[in-house]
Length: 190
Image (cartoon, rainbow, N blue to C red; front, side, top):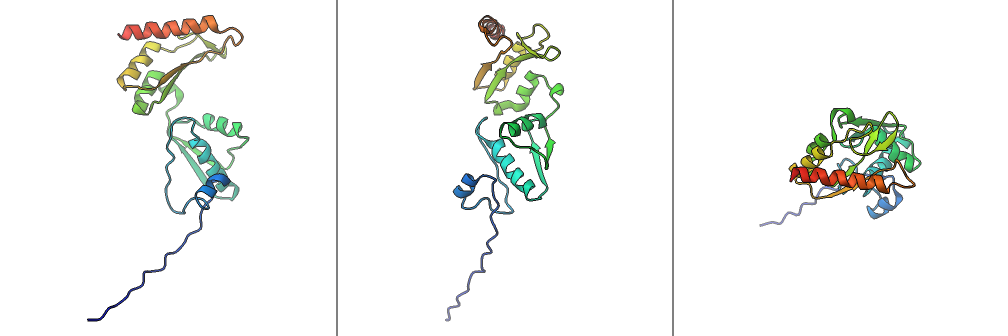
């Protein structure tokens, strides 16, 4: 009997690709492995969009063609994120898979998002006067009862935030009215 020793083929090392963030590149030992797909996962506000934009901006600076496919944020929302960081999205192609804001009312949006809803931000706005309004009043259109019903249907287990900025110096009375509307809407649902 003879023993044959076979050597393993040499593993080819591909260059790492910068994430666009020095700190993250350091943690990952030089960046991402080439030719792989990466998924950023986390709750709202954890930096998923920021990390993705950093990566794409780095590619655009190096002359690569880059594409951001958005499943939840509009191009306008992405531009706001970039602006807050002092960035321009020039050189990044953006493809929105989100429906136009006018095609879904808030209750429909809740149903579409289903269990992916972590929080609900209730705000009503009169676009003609460009000011916040009390829910469903003075040009507002938010149907709080329909939104709460949709949240119950998807078994929402998050937070609901109320926002109102029309009277920045003294919003107390109007915020009390907003809370009252939410409470009445919840009582209607039982």
